[in-house]
Length: 288
Image (tube, rainbow, N blue to C red; front, side, top):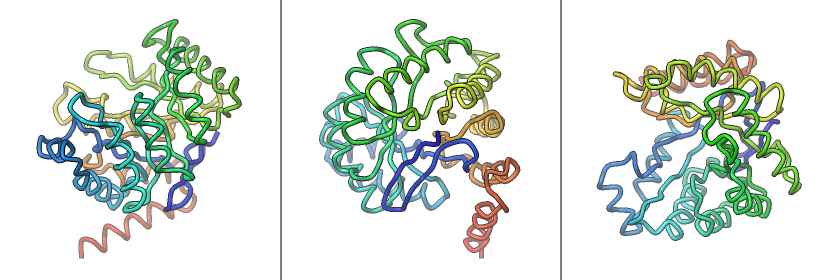
C-alpha cells in the first residue's frame, strides 16, 4: 500500500491517507440504454467515450469498463474503448473482464500506463489465468475475496482468509501487494441487514492487518430501496473512516463529489482542503 496507477493525466494513488478515488460505473453495458448497445454492435464506441468524458468533467477520477455480452465482440471492443479513453479523456482505466484475450488486447493499448484489472478472485483457476497477464503488463488488480474455500463469504474472518489467498498467490509470482486493491464486498442492506457493519470491519482489517488498499462497488448498497443512490452515498461516506480508499460509483448520484471531497477534508486526506476548495470553485464557475 498504496497502489499507483498511471495515465496521460498523471499518477493516481489509491491507499491510506490519500483522497478517495471515485471510479465511473456507467461504462457498463448492462446499465445503458439499447441505443448504446446497438452502437457497440456496429463497433461505434463514441457514446461510451462521451460518458467517460462527462464523468471526468464532473470530478470522477477514472473509469471501469464492462462490456461482456454474448452479442458483443469483447475482444475487438474492449481495446478500442480503452485506447479511445486513453487518447481522448486521459484518465486511468479499470478493465472489468475475465476474458483473457480481451484483457490482454486492452492492456496492450493502455501500456506503458498502468491499468487496473477488475477483478481477480481467490479461485485457483482465475488466479492461474489472470496473474501472469497482470505481471506481464505491470497492471494492478482488484482482489475479490471469493474463493474455493468459502465461496462468497458473509463474515469478516472468511473474507480476510480469501483475501490472504490472493495476496499469497500474487507474492508467489513476485507481484507486490501494493498492486492489489482489495474489495470489501458491498451487498444489499435490504437483503442482508448486517452487511454494512461486516463490510466496515472487513475494510479495517484489510487496511490495518493485510496492508492493502481497498475498494467497494457502491451500487449494491441501496438495491431494492427508494432513492437508491441516497443510500449508496451514505454507505460510501460511512465507509471512508473505516479504511475505504476507492469506490465504483454512479456519477449521477446527487452530491457525490462534493460530499466525498468534504469527508476527505475532515479525514485529513486533503490537507488544507485544496481539492475541496478547487472543486467548489469549479462548480461556482459553472453556475455563473
